[in-house]
Image (cartoon, rainbow, N blue to C red; front, side, top):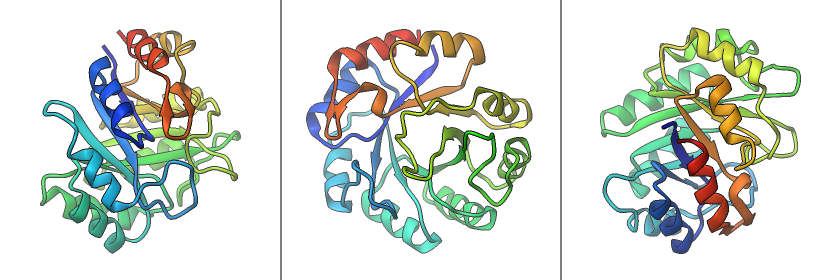
Length: 222
């Protein structure tokens, strides 16, 4: 089974739905630098993470300066941090190193636009992935990117770019961007990602996930 992360959780009900459906990792957007519909305060994120049972991993999606990310982690105490903003290689390396000392793993998102270029200091996905593999992170997440929304776009991930990252990466590669219950089985069979990450594809609206879509999505990854 391909591992499943469901992101953008904002309430206890949706956390429980994910746990019951067999999701491997639950994700919370916390203190993100830009205004996005799923942003939680540190206090609210900590409350929700404390409700997650053992054997289900917790991840916060955030971004910004090294010190800001470390401060958020120290207060929220997740298992994993997903850097999903404009962090450069040096910042990614420092964050990964300092979090590893705390037993926290780091994922770095490579956000790729419609032209196949990364929103990163290195524009070519394969070259960016090669350099990120040297930073001490634990996985790379490949996501779609638009100017209007940094994540949760609902726009299909660039599969060609995803496969280029897979080919060069020595780390697990996670697929995100435009995933939903209708397309997940065919996508998993086509590119065999280590894990998949869904947000808008299983929600009614921000702060409300769809129980049936969550179950269908997880089943589609079997």
